[in-house]
Image 1 (spheres, rainbow, N blue to C red):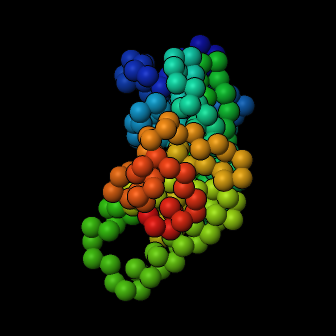
Image 2 (cartoon, rainbow, N blue to C red; image 1 turned 30 degrees about the vertical axis):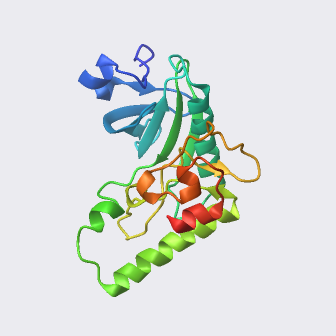
Length: 213
């Protein structure tokens, strides 16, 4: 086990060919099972926690090859935001830790489709109202902790087996009471189809941006 390779966020043949042999040790220790998502600067894996076999979502960023410090800062802000919000309406935070050549964030893994897929099917009035209420409760949790998501959209809403809708992907979020804006002048952050006009122009936004989305 000691000689097992570390996960890297960039192309790694070991991950592609033998993902079950890849270990991320850190304080707890995880074994990757398969890749479930690819982001620009990070990879998300389905993994087992070595201590008890719990399946988790393991988001990894390779700090040894990272050239943009802003990416790392956003990754750490995402971890801090999740840690601050303990709610059934936000994806559950487990751990944020470091390894020799990577930094990782561990979250609850919710198998199955998310809200975007569920919306492809007809929703009755009762279900629609229940979903909207949960999204509003998620807004309340975020804004109570002064966190603005800045990229609220159906693909960032997961679905629990109990039809609970936890929000995920806080990669471009910010704390209004502590985080700088972190935007290049005139550079918008978010998904254009869900952005407020001032967000499209790269201007600072507050809680109203999430409400609009």
